[in-house]
Image 1 (cartoon, rainbow, N blue to C red):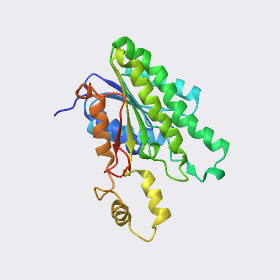
Image 2 (cartoon, helix red, strand yellow; image 1 turned 90 degrees about the vertical axis):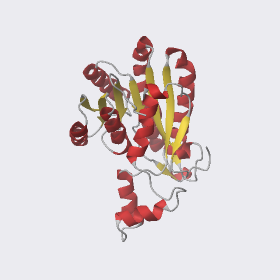
Image 3 (tube, rainbow, N blue to C red; image 1 turned 45 degrees about the horizontal axis):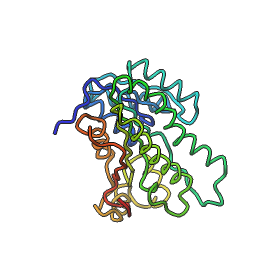
Length: 260
C-alpha cells in the first residue's frame, strides 16, 4: 500500500529531533508540506536541511515555546501563514518529567501540564476551525505507554499523558461529524536523543550499541524500536488510507506495555 499525503499540510510540534523529526520527515517524503516547531533555532535549521535532502515539498521551521499560550499562538500563526492551511496536527512536544511523588514540586507539575496538556489543547483549538471548514482533518497526540499503566515515581508525565488520551477520545467524538479524526500514539522504547542520556547515566562503561541490545532484551520483540517505525504508523493515520480510524490510542512499543 502506497500511503500518500499529497496536497496536505502538516504541523508537527517537537519536530526538530527524535520521533517528531521522524514523523515530519515521513510526512514530507509522502508528499505533505510540513511545518516543524521547536524551541531551538539551530536544531530546527538542521532538521529542515536534513528533511529537504530527501523530500521535495515545502518545509517550514518555526521557533515556538509550546508551553505558553503566547508561544503557541505565535508559532501556529507563523506556520499556518507559511503553509496556507493546517490539515494535520501532531502534538508531540514534551519531555519526560518524573520523580518520586513527594519530591515533585508544584512548579514541575505545572510546567509539565502547560507543555503536554495545555499545549495540545491550544494547538487543537487553533487548528480545528480550519479543518471544520474543509471537512477534513487529522490530529495525532503523542503520549506514552505509561499513560495507561503508570509505574511508581512516574508523575507528572504519566498523568499528563493520560490526559492526552482523554483529550483524544473527547475530541474524536465531538468532531467526527466534521471528518476530523483524532488518535493517539503511545511511545514505548524508541531510539531517540533521550536514549543517549540513558546510556550515559546507566551504562557509561558499555558501548551505546551494546547498551541498546541489553535494554532491548526487556522488550518482547527483543529490540528497541526505530523512530521511523513510529512515523510509519503516524503517516497511515494522517492519510486517507486511515480514514475509518478515530478515537483510539495505539501502542508502538514492541509489545512492552502490560495493557492493550
